[in-house]
Length: 153
Image (cartoon, rainbow, N blue to C red; front, side, top):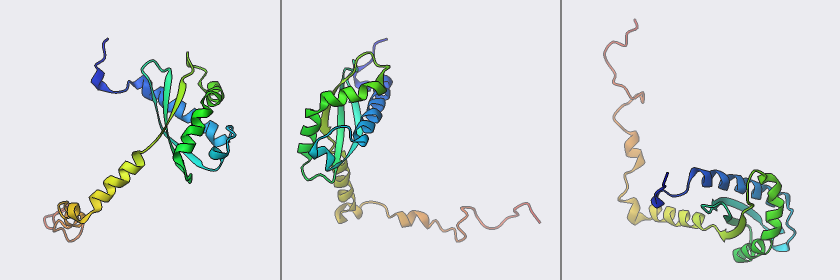
């Protein structure tokens, strides 16, 4: 069955990407990669995107507490084949072990920029006040109207 190119990632790509992310996180958590740059920072693997043929895994990593994020990405790329070998036992079911490519995850920076924009006074004045929604004229807060017989005497 042909798949349209606009549909995004397939369920298989998403499932395998999550399995690879989990296995990669385990290897990094155990500290199996001996590199001074990697040992001095905590890494968060936020997403792994698989190519359609499942032979390339693009790993989006966020270094926490690292002064030079690019150095962390370079260190991971330098150890990509070693990491691939360490991840292999957890991914035995795969026909081919994917090649790892590491990228800096900038989504958290994008989220913080959007949050800062939404909190700016220029935008805040155009957004509805959440306190206005809570005050619907119902004094007892039960969402119903008072009066009428509730059915119990």
